Amino acid sequence: MEGNFGYSREYFDRFVQSQDSSVVNKFQQKYWKTKQTFIRVTGKKEDEHVVASDANLDAKLEVFHSIQKTCMELLKVIEQYQRRICLLSQEENDLGRFLRSQGSQDKSRAGKIMQASGKALCFSSQQRMALRMPLCRLYQEVETFRYRAISDTWLTVSRMEQSRTEYRGALLWMKDVSQELDPDTQKQMEKFRKVQAQVRSTKASFDKLKNDVCQKVDLLGASRCNLLSHVLTTYQTTLLHFWEKTSRNMAAIHESFRPSELPTLKVKEASARRAERSERQAAAVTTDRSPWFNLFADLDPLSNPDAVGRASGEHDLHMA
Image (cartoon, rainbow, N blue to C red; front, side):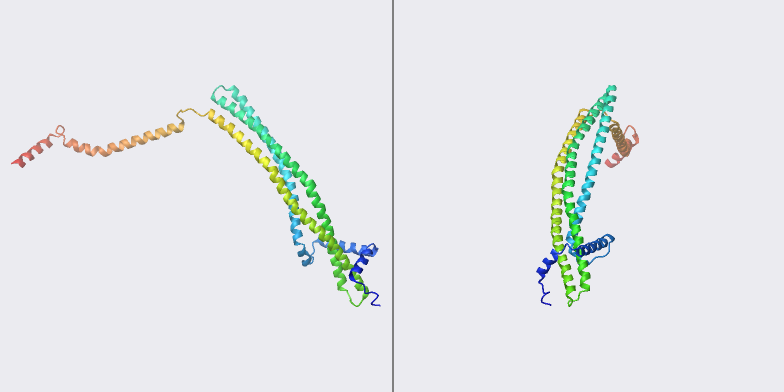
C-alpha cells in the first residue's frame, strides 16, 4: 500500500496545483490570509525571522512613502508660493503708483525721487511675475509625476502587499500543520505537502512582486531627482535675471540722485569737534610755555633794571 502512495514531490505539487479549485482548499487559504491580515492590522508580533527577511523591502517602502508624501507637500508649497508672489507684486505695484502720484504733485527734488522710485517699484512688480512661468511648469511636472509614476508604483506595492499577506498566511498554515504532523500517517503527510506546495507558490509570486517594487522605487527616486534638477534650473535662471534687472534699476536711480557736496549734519558735527580739539591743543601749548616767558621777562633790562646792575657789579668784581 505504501508503494501506491509513494508519489514524487514534483508530481504531487502539480497534482495539488491542479486541485486548487476545490472549495475546502480555497476556504483554508482565505482563513489563513484573513488571520494574517488581522495580525498585521492589530500590530501583533510576527515571526522575527520572517520580518527580518523583508528588511530591504521595508526600507524601500519607507523611501516610496517619503517620495509620495514630499511630492504632495511640494505641490502645496508651490501653490502658496505663487499666491505670495501675486500678492507681493500687487502690493509693490500699488506702492509704486502711489509714489508716482505723490511725486507728480511735488515739484521739488523729493518729488523727482518719489517718481523715480515709483517707476522702479512698478518695474520690479512686473518682472517678479515672470517667476510664475517656471513655477507653473514645476507644478505641472510634479503633478504628472505624481499621477503617473507614483500611482503606478503604488499599484505594484498594493499587489505586493496582498501577495505578502498570502505568503505569510501560508507560512502560518504550514506551521499549524507541522505541529500536528505524524510522519507515519499518510493522510497528514499529504496535507503537509499540499500546504508546502501552497507556500512555494505564494513565495514565488511574492518574490517577483518584491523585486518589481524595489526596482520601481529606485527608478522613482532617480526620476524625481532628474525632474527637479532640470525644472529648477530654469527657475533659478529666471530668479537671477529678476534680481539683476531690479538691482541695476535701483542702482541707476541711486546714481542719478546722489546728494551734492553740501555739509550735512554729521559733517558739521565732525568739523565742530575738530575745531574744539584744535583750540584745546593750542591752549595746552600756551600754558606749557608760560614759565619760559616769565624767565625771559626777569632777564629783560627794561622790565627788571636790578638784573642789569647786579650783572654789571659782578662783572667789575671779577675783573678786579
